[in-house]
Length: 462
View 1: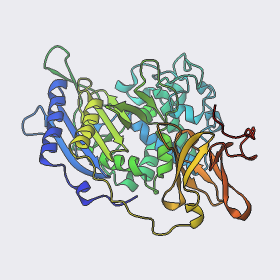
View 2: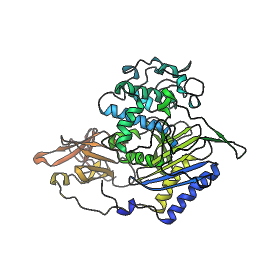
View 3: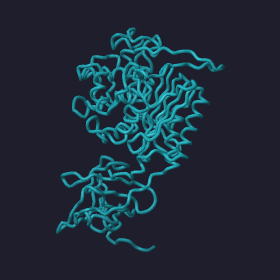
View 4: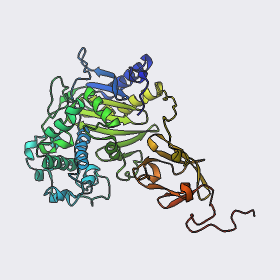
């Protein structure tokens, strides 16, 4: 990654700051939130925070804890992906391979992460978010009479018990409570000292606001026990800024960038009528205003939270409120990103030539043809290649060089596919083999390299 311009780390310009504060103020006033905190992360750095409060002289700041609800799920997903990367499990493993949970019906780890396990949305009553976890002391106690309500893998159906099972899986394979594992493996390395299972002062109190009158009702803040991995955590705007920076670029002490990128790949088709939203592996995905965002929303009695990341803009937006309902928390966080992106678009890095070049790689560049369709092959840094149509849209992909002389597709249609260079006499490249597709230096070049052959009379006029 190239080093960004120093201005990228500076706080936003005055006009941008005013626009951010105005959006936050609108969100607090229109949503009737007792308090609202917002934050913006740019290039991995917290560059702006703001807040609004209904109590004169007691506005919260970036160090004030709020309950973050289902944002907890992304933290749990990171723990599971660490287990996968260490070889302690495979995402395709049925949960039964690691735990005796017949209620899960053979669902895989990946299906639990993506909410496609078929498990019910909520735990056995009473309302788990407002009652002590002691009411469900064992994992089996979280299931009602119908733990499975859909066939596993068929559709997205949000399941809080599914993430309770993932927390239990972490405990089983690590031999310690999931909260301790989270602190040791994620929070401490990332410097998130203000994120915890229980509230630590200073923290906001949770409130419900009457729908028809400007009056408040305090909400309970219970320890949800076995259901904790679904929404127990408390955190601050400052700590979530550190987590956003991690979600953007990864941290080898916690989880690498490739595994994080895997978490934000849609795992299932969106539900009918919701083509702007999806879900990866413990990560919500949305498209708004032409911008792809990933992260998670969260709610618990008395609290709302959202963290969105835009990889393209190198920005993240965070919004936290202490209200059960009211503020459009997801839209507020998305708008914080939009405002900075529109007011202060990033300055492109200067073009620089490669410091060295392999003549054999340089010989591969230029036009190639898939049948009559023209493509360009370009040489990238680190011996990578980029294949794209010469004109119009189509199948474009970037490729990573492998030690055996092949390349692996990184994105687009050819993600995961292998690109091979087929050489002729003297070692000159004759054609490219890409997942059995043949690319030649001429459109339908004569000879036997094109599967099915080429008419021996060649191109002709009508």
